[in-house]
Length: 363
Image (cartoon, rainbow, N blue to C red; front, side, top):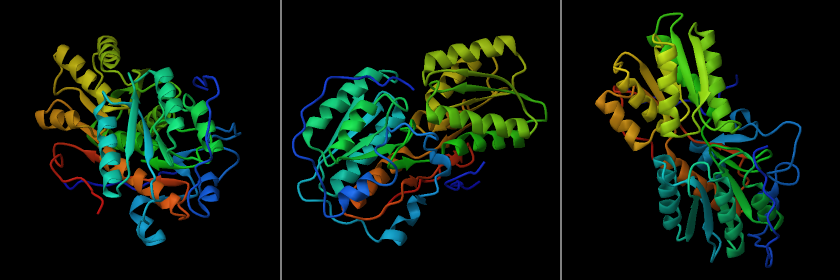
């Protein structure tokens, strides 16, 4: 079975912590036209309160990453002396480590220094904001931001964009009015997992969802995509509980669900870390091979678990490639190119049948 790369779209306030004001030097504007390009589209900034928060899954001003070259031409040379900053969620998660690797290697290709900072844990919202605030004093031309929640980095983002810094929201949580965004279609993650299970399980089979952090855009959309599609396909969604992206919480939640619903047939998890926690719970219950488990992200340990027969599948969203695309998008915008607001990166369902197929790459 070949690796199927899915279409980029499917049509189907955390903590805003106010810290003391930081001193800004002169605004870091790019080449002629860059300020207008970086600040458009939209109202004032990525964290403006809007009646309808920006939905990356059905953005009209969007493009698939594979179409960027045809639409805009080659990536221009970066501004002389430019450097970038990257705010990661948590480098203890293989997904974010891979995304940081992609960003770093792509920046090196262009001779761009890239400073990667991250929170101390997957839920360290204050620590992540502190890192972002500190980064503002370093004069970076662009900041690639992967927030823990849709709003926890807003104090820093508002200051950055007020100083004409380019801010690109890279995957997962989405700023309420994100001006620039790079990543996969989130709702499609869940739809893909549900469709796979619909094709494998009988009508009426019981399935459960382990969600990510409550209120985060990616968790909401992945859960919605899965739940709506599973129900429409005749599956019985018996539980949908938060696991906060955490292996232990996911293991405990799955243990409870298995105890309460011994005939549960499958789990869908909003990330692979939680899916691996469910693997442990299923093994402990003596149900390995009897309960299907699908994760999301495509981390290295998920691939190993698929090869071992412990994990049924993952919806890989290719973090390393996503990191590379994010850097390309930043360089294009700073070079004056009119890049659409949302740039979609690929995803694919990975099972034992296609686990060794090479991933897509950038030239």
